[in-house]
Length: 576
Image 1: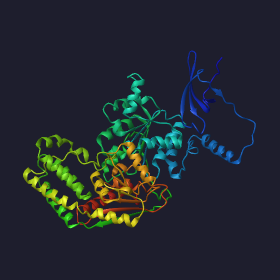
Image 2: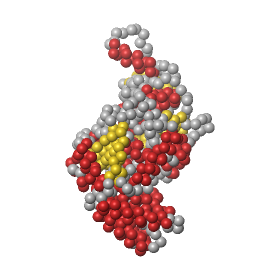
Image 3: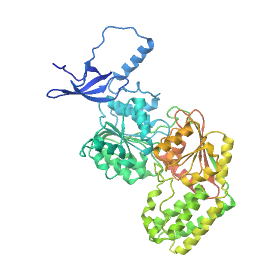
């Protein structure tokens, strides 16, 4: 007669110890659901069929035995962590990470029932990924998170899977087009690929695809984690997906170091993601000082005096922009104004970047068919808070909407501006300033810019053997190789667009961040500095912002300060 299995029994199977969580008898067999009961498999779940799998019941050891003091202390810690009251943490003691006190608070709030919607909004570098993973591990240990979904930017999927596996012994599955194709070959088409694993990781941009979203929307989720959640508050399609999934999730954890970028409506939208009637979202917002860590960061504004050729370029751009502003109210003028904003942003980045854009715009304005073809693409490329960087750091794909009613006059203004940009690109004041900074610093540095064109300008003036590039045009493997080359010491300078502004941990290698131009969003600025201003950084972080003197960049700085003031008022956070 087969043994009678009961819930709570401890068994050994496949070389490890498990606890029986559920028993489902059949005609000639028994399905046994198991949960991990050892350090190696804590938090894992497994379903076996007896007698096809051999289960060995473990009996309690009643006789005392001698052991080493260190082993006894370790056993006592694990026992205290796994057998305490329900609202104490069970997996923190066995996690392969040095947890700081502030990182325990969200998981304690989750298991003690203080809320089911959480916004982890700690400053950059304080371990929000670890905090969210600890919530997941604790819920798994209590059998409360059978189906979990993690939404991240594309570049962070592998990092999430690695953190869960190495630190919390939680195995996850990355879902993308390749995974779905493979499963379609193995299973009937009626099988939903989102049901084939317990912990799923995917990107927001993949999940929002029309052919993907219905599979997600047909399921209920025990836990939804949204990393870099601010991207779901500023983009309509991402926001729709996040709200839909949050409404179908028992618990929601949103992660962002920059919950407020000066836009009150976006902040309210973020806080209401998955909102229920049982109370508001629970927000954790701690600075380095709150976490008991030294606030070792210094920000420097370096005003750069433009060359005469650069001053002439900016003057011609100002005249062109003023003409466009006067005609902004005409039909189509609002869309054309976006093109003017792009030209101004690229002028503050580099003269070479502006020269490429003016040449492209001249070419498009000269071809009416091309202009019409690109007219409706323009708004896609210029969201100041784009998260993944694939769009933001590329040359704009649509510059063909006329800003002036008189196209011939506009082409003459553009041609003069293009000529001035080409002349200014021969000697650029910001590039010379960066060369001087790197010579004086004589240490590893990260240089951020918004556009790939400007990266090409930087490469031309820096020693090629010292430089590695990271931008949105690289594949996932190429990005990882670039980051590895920098962190390993093979390169001294990392030239990056905002594709490197999220997720990368570069504090062990570097403490110096140089912004060639000011981003128009406080969120991007914080993300850039956060690559090196993280837990584990042992030196003072220096962030240097280059500002072109007597140009529109002074107005950008003033707007950033105003937005930061609004953020302080909204979050009551004097340190941000």
